[in-house]
Amino acid sequence: MLDDFNRKRMRRERLDKARLLAALPPVNPITLLAEEEFQAFVVKNKGARPETPYPFATGIVAFSRVGFDGTRTKAFVIVDWMSKHESGRYLIKLLKSPENGQWEISYVWK
Image (tube, rainbow, N blue to C red; front, side, top):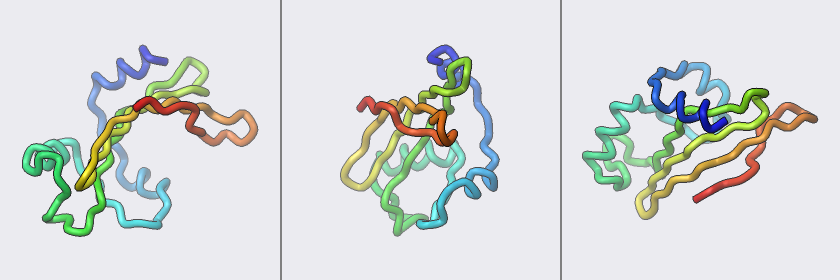
C-alpha cells in the first residue's frame, strides 16, 4: 500500500474536474484549483486566507493521490488544509467496508 502511495505521488496526473464535482455533495460552493494555481496562491498569501479572488473562502484543502493495497480495500491519502488562523497535514488510512463498499476513515495521523 505504501509502495503504491509513494509511486503515485511521484507521478503527476490531472483530475477529471466534472467527475470529481459530481461526486461531491453540492452543499457548499467549491472552486477547484490546478496545482500551479494552488502553489502560486500559497506563495502569494503565505498560507493566509485568500482575500481575492475568493473573498468568502473559509479555507483551502489539498489532497494527495491515493495509494491502495493489492486488494484495493485499504488506502492512504494525505490531506493538507489551511484557513485564516490554522493549517495542518493529516495522513489518513481508509478501509473499504465489505458490507456496503463505502470507504471509511480507519485512522488519522496528525
